[in-house]
Image (cartoon, rainbow, N blue to C red; front, side, top):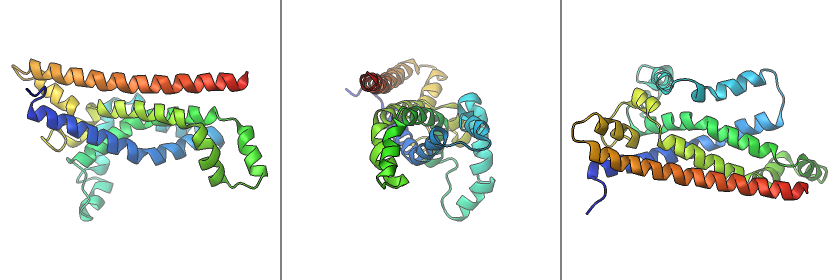
Length: 232
């Protein structure tokens, strides 16, 4: 006997796809922004940091509406995407964009903390030996920040997986296209007789969140233990 019905399975699979694509696509930008915040000083840095954290502060519906204005069929970027045949409004790619935007700040914060925990003396020593900035970053900074990166990815994935407000505002609820697990859960709660399906999806969401939280906690705990040993 199947634990989930077909519509629930579709919503679950779509949520995994949307979350994975959203987090992976946002990772390079998050790495660059986190490195800027951790390693450089520039005019307007507090403002830049505040803008990056806006999705955590704004109501998700507001974020979704901004995405609709910009990337919708009548938006400045949306019209260009439509002309190029790359429309994302009311498609699963739009749901992935919404998930990426909402999860992005968590990834940046985790990566920034990881970069700041790396001993700068190691980077300076590599530079004196002739290593260039890219070699230092990929050979020293990034490997030493790996645990923080994994923790950030786990938290960002969990946030993307649970995204609701921005997604439904931007791409609505279209079965097989944009109806992710949280949207399907909301609709089941609003439907008479949908309590069983709502409970099943709730259990799935709780399991995903617990696994992601456990991974993040383990990575941060081990990273902190190693840092303490190094300082000792």
